[in-house]
Image 1 (cartoon, rainbow, N blue to C red):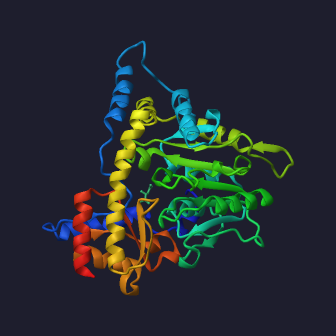
Image 2 (image 1 turned 90 degrees about the vertical axis):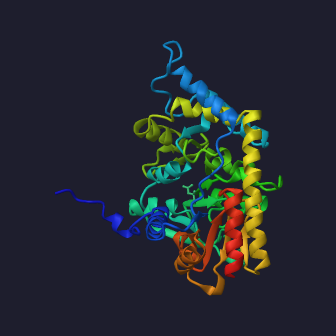
Image 3 (image 1 turned 60 degrees about the vertical axis):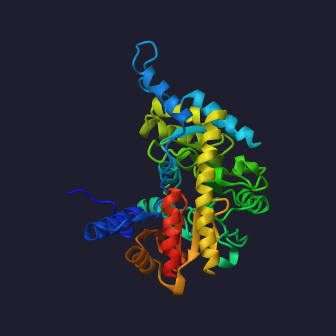
Length: 398
Ligand code: MLT
């Protein structure tokens, strides 16, 4: 009989967004005449820009001819895409070596898999509330988590406590689920703390493209010293609408070298390279051609048009909450709006209430951690028509 990984017993029965999908499917089955508006999972609704589609076609056509056909590609990604990502960083004034970039099928896999590089007995700081993948992937391997409390008092931007030592720190900015964004000074405090503690920051910047204020950092590498203490995860899901197409990237600087318990130096870059080349055969060539097109000037222009479209939705939701005097965070440099459940309701109760009375699907805050118990998240990634209709229904309800 196999001995099973009992750590799975410490997980909730299903992943947050699977649980929501089940509840919504049950409701839809019982109420076939009702139009449900989905503003729960952060899944995009706008089609890919025509320039990206052309890039994908180039990839497909290459597969049709013996001269251009591609079999296995480099596990780290093709140079054409790694160079395009490095140039994208440079456009934002940040220098990232193309050789430090690992192309992947998205930030979810990489933020989940990265914990394999770290031993069991690290002090791991994870904010609460937070994207559930960080917590679940650590629980799956039996690691212990120390939670960093985010709440209205600290604007959902927890800061380091100099009296506590940490080895691994997860940060997400702009934040999922709260939409809060660290400013340069705050991120510098985190980088200084990590350097002092010889800790590693795992920085998720999947929503950086939504930052409109040029003074706000779009990458941890905007902060001096970060290459000695931080790994960054990013994704084309929200930047370029690749939630279904799947492409992301992780930057593991070669500067990240730490002494192992036997005294020998180990490079996180070399370890991640070893991990990826063993367990991952690379992102498909076709998808990487689409991603390359996304990073071209025309591709980026089209991506920004889509982002502006979602930002209008975010404003629509924020305006509705403002009119109703419902306190909220996010919605400016982020596609997420995080608000207090009206009448102090518990978040799953509010989920059921909103679904049954207005047929709006959102995400209950408690799915992101204990501090989300009385909060709720709506996404701006719906269509404008559906978002407007959802807000009309919301208006009538409260
Ligand atoms: C979310 O809704 O939090 C995200 O879409 C989930 C993800 O990116 O995996």
